[in-house]
Amino acid sequence: VDGTVDLRSDTVTRPTRRMRAAIAEAEVGDDVYGEDPTVNRLEAMAAERCGKEAALLCPSGVMANQLALRTLARPGTEVLVEADAHLVNYEDGAGAVLGGVQFRTVPSERGVLDPEAVAAAIRPDAYHLTPTSLVAIEQTHNRRGGTVTPLERVRAILGEARERGVATYVDGARIFNASAALGIPVAGLVEDADGLMFSLSKGLGCPVGSVLVGSQDAIERARLWRRRYGGAMRQAGVLAAAGIHALEHHVDRLAEDHANARRIADELDGTGAVEAERVETNMVYVDTGTLDAPAVASQLAEDGILVGALGPATLRLVTHLDVDTDACVRAARAIGELLSAFG
Ligand SMILES: Cc1ncc(COP(=O)(O)O)c(C=O)c1O
Image (cartoon, rainbow, N blue to C red; front, side):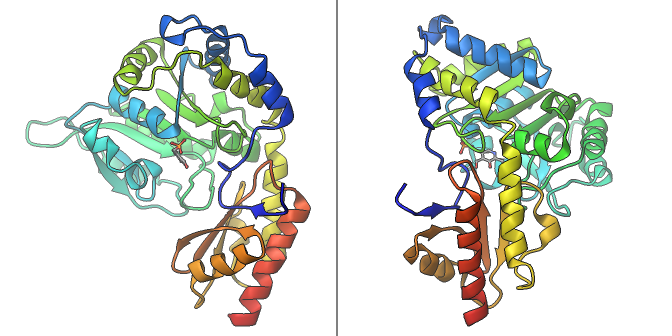
C-alpha cells in the first residue's frame, strides 16, 4: 500500500477487494446452533477437497492442531513429530498443557522425515512405556524452509504408523503450497492421514481461520473440544465466506508465489547465502554468514523491506499474494547489496 515490501510471513496479507465483497455479502446464522449456511458450506467444501468425511472451521492453526492432538492422540502418550515442527516448537507447550501429550522428536534432513527413523521411534503400548499414539508430519515444513515431503515419503511415514495401529496427522498449514509444488491434489496427499488441518490465513490470503478435516467421528469430538477451548463462534460465516472465496480463487495462484520465491533465490544466487534447491515453495531462507541477521533485518526495514530474522544468521522471506515480482526483486537486490557490502 505504502511501498513497503512485507516478506516476513504469508500471514500478513490483507483481504482483497473481492474477498471483502464476499465477506460483506455472506449469509450468516448462529454456528453454535449449526445454523450458519456459509460455515456449513465451507466445511463441506473443505472435507470434499481433502477427501475426508467432515471438517471444522477453527479460529487459528494452533487451535486446529490442538484439537487434533486432543482427538487423535491420547493424554499420557507420545506424539511423534519432526524436531523442528510447529507443534513442538511454536505452540507454547499447548500439547502438554491442553492435550496431555508429550512429544518425541525425530531430526530430519530438510524437515522430511525418514520412515525408518519414524518406525524406530514408535513405542508400543506396554505397561512401563509411554506409548506413541500419533505420528504427525508438517506439510510444507515451515521452520525448514517451506520444504515438501513427496507423496511416496508421506505414504511410507504414515504407513509405518498405521501398521502399528498409531493414528496419523498432517499439520498442513501450507498443504496447498505442497499440492501446488507437487502437482497433486490435497486429497491425494492425505489419503493415509486420519486428520489434517490447513490454514486459510496463510498463502490462501484470508484474515482468519484454519480448517480441521477428518472422519465424522473425529470432527464431532473436535467440535466439542473446540467449544471447551472457547473456539465455538457465532456468525462465523463472515470468516467462512473469505475461506470459500480463497478456495475458489486463491489456490491456483500459489504457483505465482513459488515463482517469486524462486526469483528471489535466483537474484541471490552467487552470494552463497541461499541454497537454491531448498526453495521449493514460497519461502526463502537466507544465510547472513558473519553478519547479524536481526541487524540486517533492521537495516532493510529502513528501506521499507520487512523480512524475518529467525536466528543469529538466518533471514526468512515468504512470498504471498500481497507482493508482486517487482517487489520481490527489489527486496532480493537490497539483501544482495547488503551482504556483498558488509559480508
Ligand atoms: C506449520 C504451521 N502449523 C501451524 C501454524 C499455526 O497457525 P496460526 O498462526 O493460525 O495459529 C503455523 C503458523 O505459522 C504453521 O506454520
